[in-house]
Image (tube, rainbow, N blue to C red):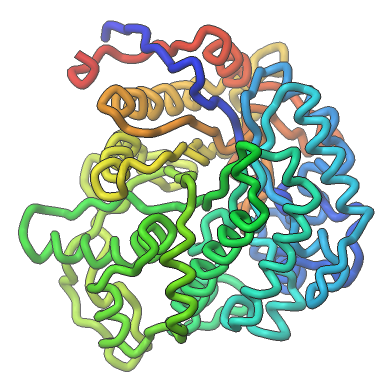
Length: 478
């Protein structure tokens, strides 16, 4: 197939992302500073691939200068990471800062800026302090919202004059979905009401931090605040009403539950009706709903990996189990789909275009960017050449095809400002640990976690410099 070159806008972000808990390791962490992820790992280590977890991770805490030098070499315009809430404070009730950890964050931010990489900082990437999870049930308790705002204030006071890109959460729906909805992560409690209460309190926490951001007038210095969401681009099996209804309800429970309050300041009426019908409506006050209404985000990061396909239920629901949104749908396994065989995820780059058009048409063409997109591959060492460099042409093709669809959407007036790869380096993922590798840069576990740029890193460097990609000249581009 003929190939053509596709231009990338000059001001378009071409960066990469990671998180604190997946990279830092435990150097310097006090015993009282476990996050939820640390708690899960300590209590359920056997489910983590080969036992790897957040204990060492990529050792970014000790090797951040080395890694930021590599970011500079590749030419990343931006790097998104998180501040570990559980480590930033010594006292969560009174927001007493751990000066040792805060100094490390000082150094990371300063090093990024010095090396020409714009820092993008998320306040929580699954790093809820473990003690708050155990004492209050985490985000099930309204008190956690207030503690999060206290934490956010300390962070903004310290770094608000340096960092221009702020986010409250990364994928705020994920932890409680795994724990309380599907009960596949510690402590394995299926409780749909808790799931929805966590969802609500995180949406409220975003609004409260936006309110704080406005009070501190940080926008006057060119800073913006948003949230990183992972809406699952959802396709119905067919055009039939029953399948379309299944997709619409799936979308309500998993996508609009955060998209709408974050961007529009309200919850969909149909969702509220369903929550009441199934007796899982979150506890709330009118005052807090007003806060959500009045404090929407400046922009959103959207994590996009694969599509979700659903159909109407074909089997009876077990009425003896607690309500689950799958009461209304089943997953649809579409024949002939292209797969990443290692991760078990469908590869369908059109999700970029479809999500972009949705944000334009349904959400006021809000400013946004792709905050995560990437391809996890197992046993990548098999693809090393004689110089020891991983030849990850599959990753280059994956990124190219997704960027192709994203850039086409931008041509149609979509307000998308960038693309960030997951991830900068290979890193620890929940349960999968280092099994599936996502990085531009290899972390060699057998050789003291040494770093080695993959072929994709050199390719990414090239497209950042030339501001163009080579893509298949298919009918869509014509």
